[in-house]
Amino acid sequence: MAVNAVAPSLQRFVSIFSALRNHFVPTHSKRSAFAIHLHRLKAMGEWSAVSAALA
Image 1 (cartoon, rainbow, N blue to C red):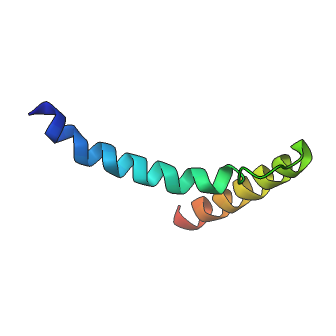
Image 2 (image 1 turned 60 degrees about the horizontal axis):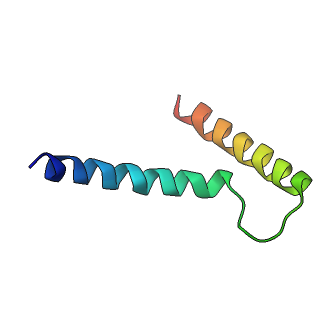
């Protein structure tokens, strides 16, 4: 019974986590460390903009 109660919230968490992760983790193609660094900076900038707009 307890597993059934947790399953919907776990599924929701995984869904949201996956969507957010896609913004911060570059695709699995070969990228340089600098390209990954730039991607993360851009993602954090976008996250900050959205966070500020919602606050």
